[in-house]
Length: 208
Ligand code: CO
Image 1: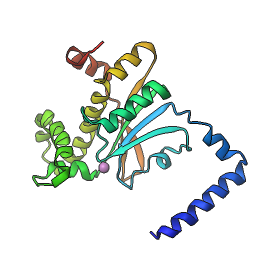
Image 2: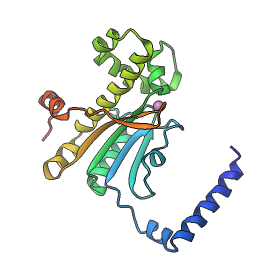
Image 3: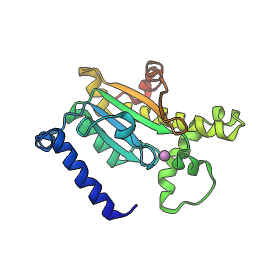
């Protein structure tokens, strides 16, 4: 991709937007009203807004390698805190995807340098679910299930936070675990049973 082409594309995009609505950027500049937080993978094939069919201003987006919410990661937790306390989002989505390179790397016994601490968070998910994952002998199926279980664990990391627990007391916030199926382009709702999970984890993580 030629970098100059990006500027050409951008000019065309801005002109198209203004062509359809003369006040488009005036409205956009006046502020965002996102009621959805999306936490997804940085993978270039998983384009958050495009696959959800949402316009600028509609979804607050955070992306990193393997859609992680590590317990002591200031970046994802700042995004989460801002979304919950200031934007007052009603929905928090953690979206993984099949064929995720970050998940794959965590399955390989190899030194990845600066990536090691990040990957350790993903390896911890494998350890937590080792019994189930080791039962799956087909490597592709194990890989897919690992992607799903990682989404589930990152949803749990969201629930563990004081911001989310306090906000849930005052309003309805729904947490969603999704996977983008890169083979079909479809979003799959993992339908994670949060009530069941909450019962189990709140004994340990309840902080209000
Ligand atoms: Co990925």
